Image 1: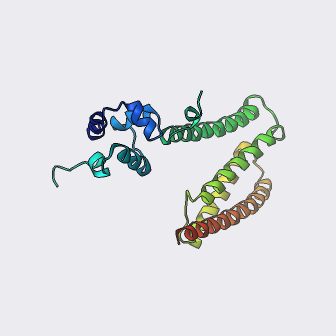
Image 2: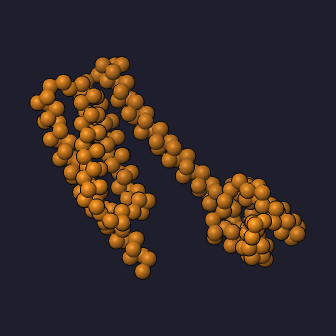
Image 3: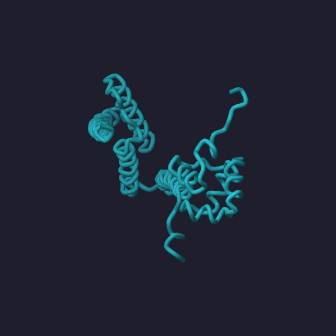
Length: 67
Length: 144
C-alpha cells in the first residue's frame, strides 16, 4: 500500500478523482496505485509527483529498514 | 460520453493488451481444435480444411515476424549452431505434425513430406533471420 501517495493527496485535499483528472488517468488507476496493486510507469509517477508538488523519492521510494 | 472517457490510460491499455493476447492464443487453439474435430470426429478430408490450416500457419508465422520486427526478441549474435538446432526442431515438429494429422504410414510419402517441410522451414528461417537482422539494425540506429 502506498500511504505516502495517499497522504500527499489528502494533504492537498484532493479526491482520487481530482488527482486522476490532473494526471489524465482514471480514478481506478489512482486507487490501485495507492493500494499497491498497479505499478505505474515512470512517466505516470513523474506526472503524479509534479501534480502533488513532491519528488519521486517522497512519493514512491521505500526505505529499507536495513539501510 | 466525452472525449476523455474514450481515451485509455496506461493501466487500461495494459489490460486490453493482456486480454487481447490471451484471446489471440485461444483463437489459435480453437482453430487448431476445429481442424482436429473436422478430421477426427466429422471424418472430413484434410483438403476440406486446408484454408483454416493455411490461416493458422500465416498467423503463427506473422506473430513471430511481428515480435522480431518490434524488438520483442532481439538476436544479438547469429550463432550458426543455434540457428541449425532451431531449423532442425521446426523440421522435426513439422514432420511429426504432418505425419500424425494426415496419418501417413508410407515411408516414401514421409520422405517426400520431409523434403517439402525442410524447404518451407529453410525459407521461414531465412526470412526470420533477415527480419531479426533488420530489426536489430533499426533498434541500434535509434539508440545512437
